[in-house]
Image 1 (cartoon, helix red, strand yellow):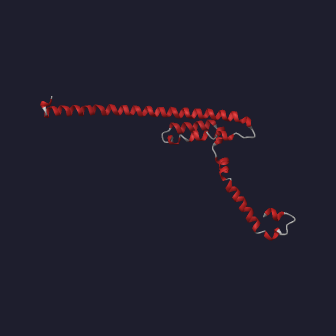
Image 2 (cartoon, helix red, strand yellow):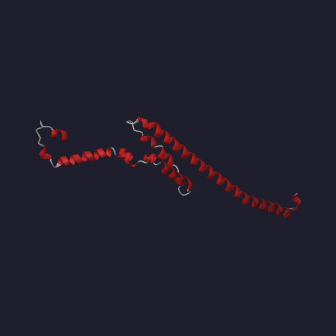
Image 3 (tube, one colour):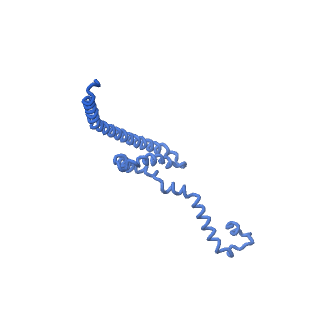
Length: 159
């Protein structure tokens, strides 16, 4: 309608619709924004720019991995790193190798550190279980031995 009203050959005068034209422009702008809201969030709210702050990313990763309270968020680190290749612009293809290389290096470091932490925790759990076994097993053997001796006193002829 706006295009039609702006043409010089039109028989309708645009000044007679001056109340509705700003409203229509606002509706078109808002609906266009609604259509691209996901793209807008990805462009402005993504964490892929953390690639340029590698030292802070490594510090964040170490804090998340090392502290037990934060360990539940460990999956965030690979999730952020996997978005780094989206920084490669089709207009600057020479950025593909450096960005890809840095992404792979950070992902390798992150997965290595996460794996080390998992191995350390598994080892700690195993040692704790061994410690429990040393405390529990002697008492179980003592109880079984006591029951056998008691049974011998109650039933001396069973041997």
